[in-house]
Length: 101
Figure: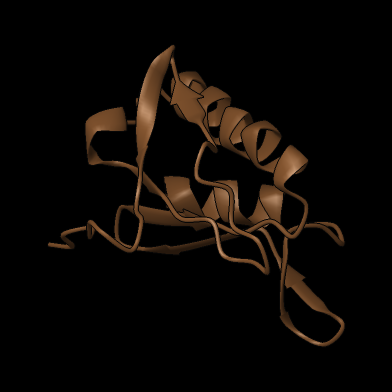
């Protein structure tokens, strides 16, 4: 129920990643896993900050050690860096993979 409130709040505007022509979504979730999508990479740290602040307001926290970043685009950057509470979020590249469940 808590994550549903976060998803409604974040998906209330026309921002995020394009999933179909004319359809944008910034946050999706399954159980306690959240995916953030963003077409403009400059906005992703802002979206992540929103999630972190929402979690804190509910006495919850994200675990950076269990988070991953993936940049998909015409020219994906290898140096893209996101942080949660000053801890680096690992990036998934073609030479490593992310273990899910």
